[in-house]
Amino acid sequence: MQKTIFIVLLSLVTFSCNSGENKKDDSALMTENGKERAASVQNLNSEGLALKGDGSFTVKGKITGAAGKKVILQIFPVFTAGRNQKVNNAGSVMLDESGEFEIPAKVDHKTFGALLIDNAHVAYLVLDGSDIQFTADYNDFSNFSIEGSPESALIKDYFSHLLGMVTRINEARAAVQQAQKSGDKAGVESAKALENQNVDAYFSYVRDYADTTSSPLMALFATGMLEPSLYSDFLMEISNRYKGIADASPYYQRILKLARGQNGLVGQVAPEIRLPNPDGDTLALSDLRGKYVLLDFWAAWCGPCRRENPNVVKLYKKYKDRNFTVFSVSLDKSRQSWIQAIQQDGLEWPNHVSELAFWSTEAIKPYGVRSIPATFLLDPEGRIIAKDLRGYMLEKKLEQLLGK
Image (cartoon, rainbow, N blue to C red; front, top):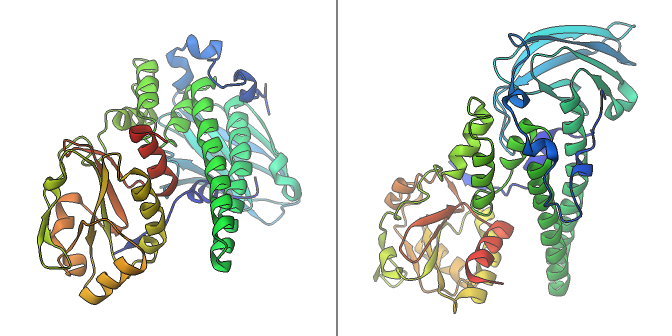
């Protein structure tokens, strides 16, 4: 692969303002609609997540054309999609003219790792205590071969497929930005529709892969790449499927936590907010009980907030007559800037409040807000059912709740 996994996965994240052997193609396990489970998944056992021996292993092999370069073995304690990784550099060696190397290491649970020379020369591995034989040509590194770890071949194919999908998403996003710069409203809508179509395909692939892969570790990892608020039923299904089989795996524990909704305030009644609007009248969040409410922390000075505002406006117009509204809390310092941004961005809902206190805003404290935009979606009883949904994710969640 020509890009690291971090680039691939983080390309789907929006920005914020803040203080070889028996190689098996998993796509063959999917039916056309991606719903049929592989027979191996239906007959799971704990072996699929078990360590070999005491977890000690060796990665050795040969990389031609890389004399004088350092090859490093990294181990990821818990590999989490779209997050900066805490990695353990388990060992490294300088390659000589022969290109041969050997790096011993040990893991305490089945996990992921990487063999790398630089960001353009990375091979992701599944580490379970088995010895791995690695062969590659530095000038054609993406065609490396692995023996001793069939699941490493699976992860190679998985991310190669995702890279192509992410490339199409980013191309559509670039088209959106270009159309916006030229003032082509029709072009923006067309490119945005293509972007959403590609993102739909991306998450459908991830979900179906998790549902059908022969590797329990890959199933848990792929499930963890899904947005919990959109795939809550599937997360619960996967956590039930692997109950008693994968309990000791940190990847399973992460899925279990997400399935149970133990992610911050989700499931709790939203803390009350009572603040003045631009006219000085006090508005209360609780006064909107009976409606689905998007609680949106933002500011006029926050570029990512302003870029997300058109999407919120679009969704407000679409769903305002279907029991939905927005409650916006500004972290501005200037009343004039706040009001001007409301007018410029066409934020036509009536619920705008602010303390004009910047990051000293008291209202953010019970919500743990440390960056904006920060959103919390409330049900008609005032309970938080999702958080930090933007763009595509917010649109899909509202479609689930209120229809297309």
